[in-house]
Length: 132
Image 1 (tube, rainbow, N blue to C red):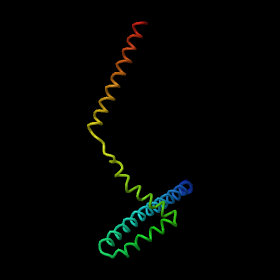
Image 2: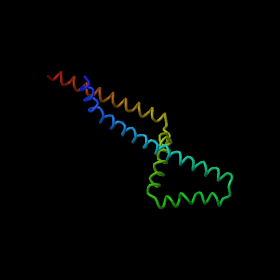
Image 3: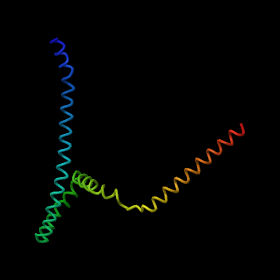
Image 4: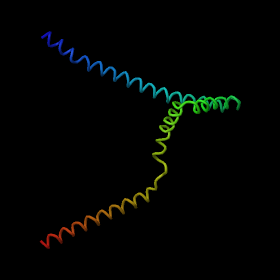
C-alpha cells in the first residue's frame, strides 16, 4: 500500500506543479491588467485635479510626459490603445442608438417574408403530392 501511495505521488506531482505554474501566470497577468487600469485612472484623476487647481504650465507639463512616452514607446502606445478600447466598448454597444419602431417594423417584415416562404414551400409540396 505504501508503494502505491508513493507511485501515486510521483504521478500526481507533475500535474500539481503545472497547475501551480498556471495559477502563478494567471495571477501575474491579472495583476498587470489591474495595474494598467489603475495607473490610467490615477493619471486621469491627477490631470483632472491639475486642471482644477494648478496653473496651466503645470498641467501642460503633465500632458507633455505621456505625449513624449507615447511617441517613444510602442508598449505605451499599445497600453493606451488597449485601455481606451476597453473604456469605450460599453459606450459603442449602445451607439448609434437604434430606433425601436424601425426595429419592430423590420422584424414584422422579416416574419411576414418567412411566413410567405413557408406557405409557398408548403403549397409546392401539396402540388408535388397531387402530381404523384
